[in-house]
Amino acid sequence: MAISFTKSVLSRLNQEIAELEARMLEQKKKTDKALLKIRQIEKDCKLSSSPSDLSSKMSRISKLKEDIKKFNQHQLELSKELDKKKFTLSQLPPTE
Image (tube, rainbow, N blue to C red; front, top):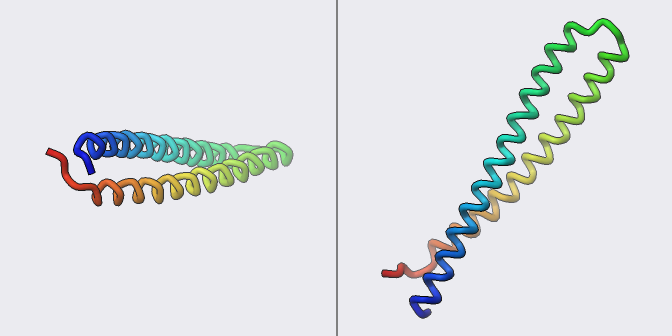
């Protein structure tokens, strides 16, 4: 492989890795935010006096839990893709 070609591949892979890591961090933040909302709603449930209000809050918690599952699944997919990119990067010859 020509050095210039290898350098462009390395550069592209490094950029893709950085983008994947940023997307993973974004998914982690979304998960953390949803967990905080769940905790807050659970606290509010203790203060709820009406059944309809309680039902609404429980529905919101269920939706947030589904969102968390989606975020975790997406993060898993990103992690697999990141591992592939890092493996490909490790297989390239060093350029000097």
